[in-house]
Figure 1 (cartoon, helix red, strand yellow):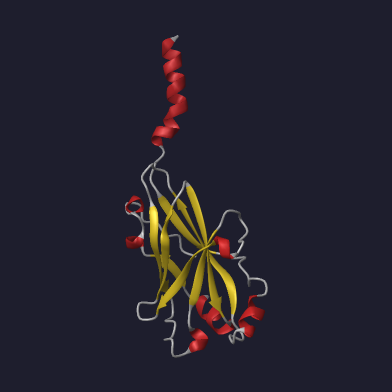
Figure 2 (spheres, rainbow, N blue to C red):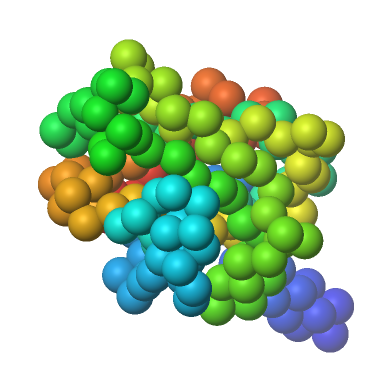
Length: 180
């Protein structure tokens, strides 16, 4: 009888023991991400005619360990044709990071967690978290970029990847990027 109980417990628990309990992340380009409603009108009012916000990508962090993991910074490396220097304002990249609690992006001030800063020399977009942002079991962010038609066309010729050195220690052992 006790042998049957042991074997039953082993069958139930084996998948749990065999599955890796590591933390990981993925970044994927949003195929359906479109212009955010009214963003063209807002940019036209503030002197940015032709610019609009577009949902570009989603970052998903999966924390499968009990280790603390607080984000202080996320840096995205551009892998594609160089985005020209700031002296060409029609191609200057900027963006925002929104927490994503549903499948649909809700781009409100309350959901915005960081504003992006573009480094034209390194071709990197950096988001700084103040205060730090604690990662939970599953944490999703949506990357929203401010673009115009010319910049959007350039972005379709490449993709972003996460610079893993900026991630919390709990995510340093599992470096995973899923290309767009």
